Image 1 (tube, helix red, strand yellow):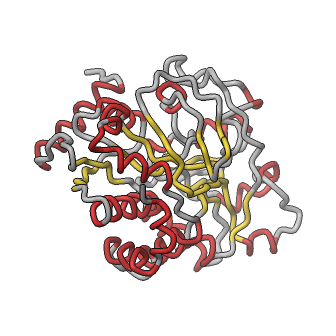
Image 2 (cartoon, rainbow, N blue to C red; image 1 turned 60 degrees about the vertical axis):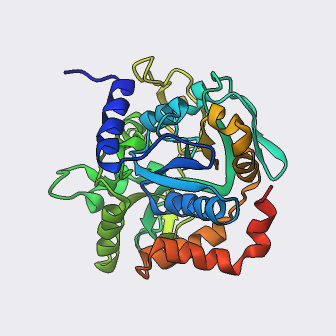
Image 3 (cartoon, helix red, strand yellow; image 1 turned 90 degrees about the vertical axis):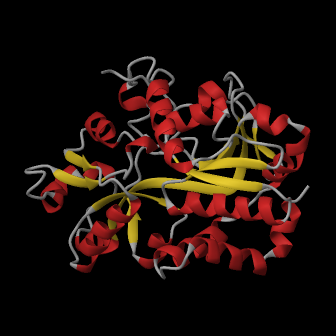
Length: 336
């Protein structure tokens, strides 16, 4: 049986709803998607606590995998009304669903969205960057290594029994993040195999184990994140991002060769919270909309909370509540 994106999204959503018993949005009740990485979870938990504790909303949560299916579920609006911290250079639905400028700190940071307007979006404050990384001890031991163009020269050091003669990339953990790691490697002629481990936790566990053994490894990763502060890593400086308009599902992922995405690194990401326009246009939800328009969580604050959750094993609700209790001077500016 063949599923298209919408059919698959509907199937997943109905399956979750059968066990979750969530209701559609009412005047003071909405449902948000749970992100599948810690930073996104933190951003949405911050939003939820402020919406509930300060603005009187009741926010339910539903687990839903990242990707186009989630965007379509939010655009439908029946069961999920908003989701948090999408990274535009990873998203593949934003170009066809958003029709507005993105504003960060009072300035337009993206003005070329010409979608159908089925999604509304506002920046979170988090500015993300992504690359492939190697440990600094590898660079120190191999001073001729400068950037991604040198990876093949050292691929034997990155090879494993699993990849044979090829080097190994600990790639994007979740397929729905749309990293296209293997496509990138192939287009750039990097003789490595991308391995998808399924979760952020699994990818980090493998990287930390290799680091402890002082073994070379190539890792897809991003900032802000505690990992970058805890371990000395060096980016391989993938080619500068450039869009490829024809690289879409509708065009059967026709690439632009080595000139553009996905044969490049990622763009600088002004991350966004995104929502159903009709739901947030209701007068009773005006306060929630105004909050999202003003929300401006910093990289530093998010990184501290990620560290407490991932490294120190603390509960996310407790960590975010602690941040909220200690930072009223910041989040109070986001209130309507």
